Image (tube, rainbow, N blue to C red):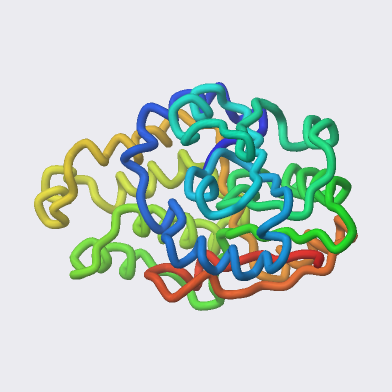
Length: 267
């Protein structure tokens, strides 16, 4: 999940590049999810692709990628480097897409999930305007499930054999979205974590999490960013608003994959 709109950069993405190496699956795309995205792109995978953010996993997976990101630090630190067919550009996902030309494919990993709903609508509209005929959109997105994610389930995950700190943060966001609406301030994820696990030393001991990973939750404490955690119907409505035909497909069978489906449009 990398930043691409200038409004969120000062309070969140400006420092994210310093801790990006600590980020992990499923909030970074597993190889299985990337393979599903390549397959969903079809013939467009070999065409010209616009990536919303400098997701490094796209660099090797797609033939021709222009990655658009608002954070110079993310570009310098996270992007594997420019080549004749792969480049990163600093800019805004709404205002700067038109200047980049036309694309066969738009890619994103949790890109719309870091935006307010109205901003996500603007971004998808800009993407739709940049697609060539029969162009495709392939975005992995956070979606809230029908079944409730309870605080008991979040606490239980901390003691589960398959504990995953990145998945735990996702579970907290899903829980908050079910109770307070689709836009979840990441500060609320921090606050909920601190309430659910007030004794950090005990949490680290029980989970075996390296202490340096806690910076990923503390980074949320002063952030102005919100996650957008829509239902599947809300994602499909977003597509219709941009004049695209949308559908939802699985992103794989890895842990938490049902909450991180592929949002597919066009083609």
